[in-house]
Length: 200
Image 1 (cartoon, rainbow, N blue to C red):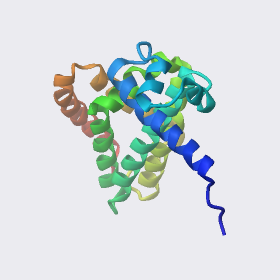
Image 2 (cartoon, rainbow, N blue to C red):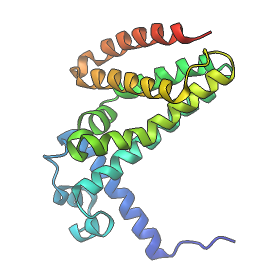
Image 3 (cartoon, one colour):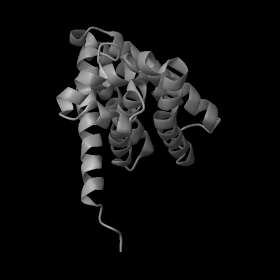
Image 4 (cartoon, rainbow, N blue to C red):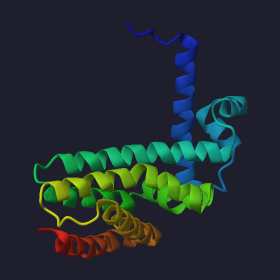
């Protein structure tokens, strides 16, 4: 029988959740450099001490926000893939879901635009690989195993797909918000043609 969390533990978890939710909203609105930890504490209605109890600094808080955003995003993309029996149909659904995320203003700002600024290019890329690369490899493996894709080297194919999808997402996020829908459709058409060329 699992132990129920104490009142203190429950309050601590609620405080951490409030900080993540508040920080995500402020980082998306103001960006990393213009968001102060004091503003996060004030908006979350906690002390600055509570912020430092959970996160060592602003970068640590940002990393937690980005990881939570990516975990939720990749889970919804995986669900889109698994919703189809045919892995090829699922792959197109997952790709579409990913491009939709790149159009989402909060995702675009937190993950794609501010992420490299907040974490530095290498740390940001490593975080992206942790969340997205595994899912892409899973999809490529399913396609090859089902005979829906030629038996190409899985790791190399997944790595190239990761770079290609990431480049499309960055292009969408870099567009003016009013133009992202158009760029997303164009990116989807280009990716669709490329992926179709690999399918059997």
